[in-house]
Image 1 (cartoon, one colour):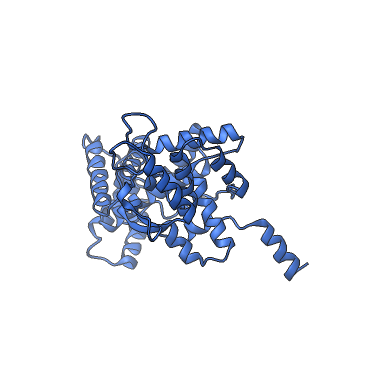
Image 2 (cartoon, one colour):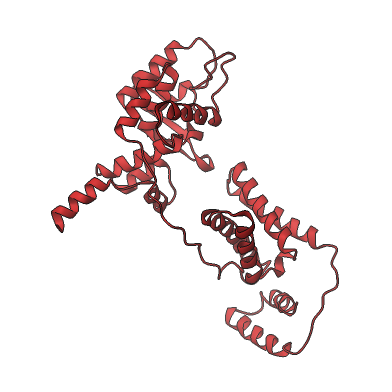
Amino acid sequence: MTDNLINEIELAMLEVLDNEQLGQLRKVLEYTFRNIIVTERDSVHTEGNNQALIESFVAAKKVEGCSDKSISYYKSTINNAISRIEKEIVHVTTDDLRCYLNEYQAVSGASKVTVDNIRRILSSFFSWLEEENYIVKSPVRRIHKVKVGKTVKETYTDEALEQMRDHCSNARDLALIDLLASTGMRVGELVKLNKNDIDYQNRECIVTGKGDKQRKVYFDARTKIHLQNYINSRTDTNEALFVSLLAPYNRLLISGVEIRLRQLGHELNIPKVHPHKFRRTLATMAIDKGMPIEQVQHLLGHQSLDTTLQYAMVNQNNVKMSHHKFIG
């Protein structure tokens, strides 16, 4: 409770003192209150205050252009943490958050990736509180990124791609696989496309990615032919590029694409067939064939180059050949 009182005094002096002076003030206050026990009166406004701060943060994220899905994830993650800690947000300490993350992982059995995602969201929230002068310093600053073991993520082999193409029983599935494989677009971008979005002459189309950012993606001649065959075979009037195979021919959803690809994988005994694997395969192939990493980043629509590097797996055969050439 003494720390909370000192924090409130620091907040009150934030606009008067600089960082060095605030540091000195804290030392004086900690020494002054060293033998004093401070108790807190019950506050009926704690929950309301917390929700007001969370709603303000959410509103800021909406203004920044975050998607509804991201906003919902931010809100639920922060609410879960604060409700578990049971303190006013402005009084939450580093130890509170460490204990919460440790308990969350122990009870839920969550992976290190999940725990680090929670840490990252809490860091964003408390950093915003610091910038807006609701708190003096973010308590997440001293909680470092969770170390996550790297695993080699699989890509499709040329044989697996050809097997899937040959196994397609309709023009839609063939065009869908080709478009995913040649463009590397996200499945969420794929299902938003309409028929008139496709530029067949230049073999390209504009997709809308995360944060409503648009970019051009490109496809090969085979994809062009299979797309045209599929569109010409349709009898419906839906504007969507990909629709269900049965009436009323609704726009294909992400879940529909995932289910169909999973079925193909099961029938062909190909492990882990899902839309995102096409994206990783394209990135790996592009880098393996010498495409500059910055161009791969633009092709995939990544904001950070580090994200692109995580997607791309270097071909181990090329590593082996380079070892023999330069070292062996």
